[in-house]
Length: 128
Image (cartoon, rainbow, N blue to C red; front, side, top):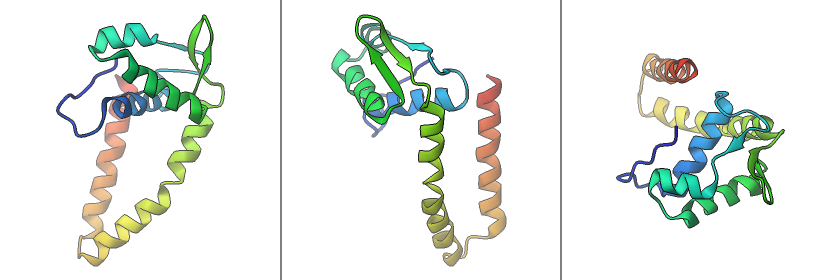
């Protein structure tokens, strides 16, 4: 389920955060689902448990997961709403980027094709 790209410039804990968030948004993880323990995730991914703990702590601080002492970590009831709100806030960044592409003479058709490919990837994720 979780995969780490050791060649990526992105830190491992950020890769874990992104994957948990993505799994929640596409419905692989649902509210109240238990996520793998720090120890089991560290063993499976062959990474230091502190790295997993750092990712889980950030997710907990964002309200995406909640830690229940002695029971583990679970997807919060509000995770989807929090993530949707955070992602929607990126629309202004997207608009700025599209403007920069437009003034750089990138055709609207190319930008639309890029958007279409992104939605196709989303469809594939939902069907896997």
